[in-house]
Length: 69
Image (spheres, rainbow, N blue to C red):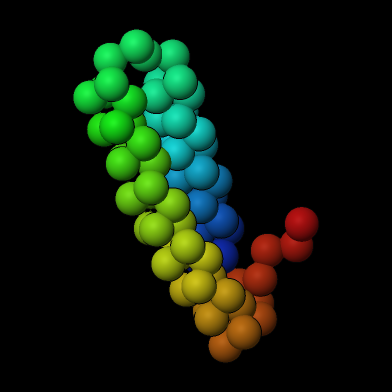
């Protein structure tokens, strides 16, 4: 597995975890838990955006790491 593939897999995992947290927030009635889940999802979004920037940079610098989709 290449570095590019690993980074794209990590992005997919982060996006999945974010979606799961958002689902938890919608499914619970506890307002504190809803806020906490939404806060965690927001943090994961920030991390995801940072990693996407890094992936784009690496793919520009090292085209062989670009994952064909």
